[in-house]
Amino acid sequence: MAKGRKKGFTLAELLVASTLVAIVMGSVYTAFYSSIRIWRLGEENMNAYQDARIASNMVRNDLVRMMPYSWHLFEGDDSEFGFYTITPPLDVETGVIPRIMWVHYEVKKDGDGALLERDEQPVEGPLPLQYPGMEEAPDIKTKVDLGDKETFTVSTNILKMKVEYIWLPAPPEIPEGGAPTESEAEEEAATLAEPVVKDEPMEDWDKPQAMRITFLVHDTREEKETTTFTAYIPFNGSPPTLTAEDME
Image (cartoon, rainbow, N blue to C red; front, side, top):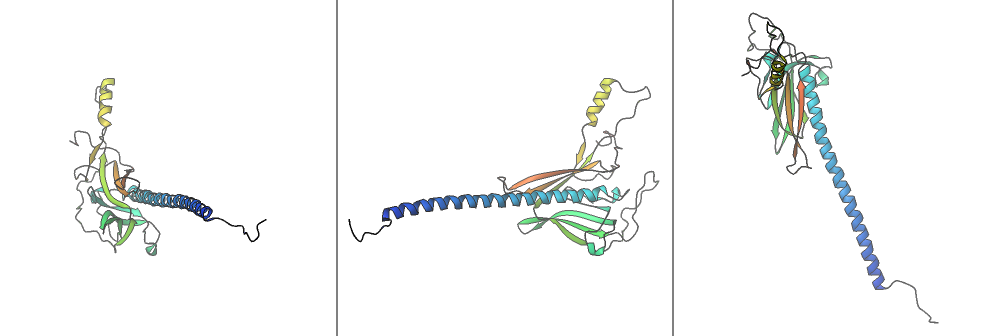
């Protein structure tokens, strides 16, 4: 029996063991890194969509509370809009009780990105309201006494906002001879099913029945790194009053 022989690993065994450990650790690191990356992408996308939902809900809440008989004071186009609404101030230091406010939404450039901003100003004087049946329309150029303007950033993930205004033609009056025939009713129904969509409010038209707002949102999952989020906002108590002929 040989004396002085010690037990241990050969160089070849150490190399094989080191190689296996390196492979296992590399696989674990790759899986861990991929999981972290997917989690971060998912969180970024979730934040982007959450911002779009928060923005659309905020706009919806302001629009449905629009000051009655003040549509003629509405200002806007296909990329921004402002109106008078009854809402609590976002600046809680000024109070939490709803009051008449001038609210304005616009996407503004911020370096390589963009910000969806909401301006608000409290109304501190009377509004020139336009009631149904008024013999003479109020002067909409009358200066409204507004308080200090406060600006709030609603979202940093919305890159662009497209605004559209939707009118529905009013149903035709029933002729004196009685109700329309079945074929006439089907033809009229097909005509009424087509809404009129404009990129800006029409001065000679009444209040639209709805607004469609499309947000261009930053989305890292898409090839162009953007996606769209569309919200339809109907106006309360806004029945059609214009016929299809009036809208031509």
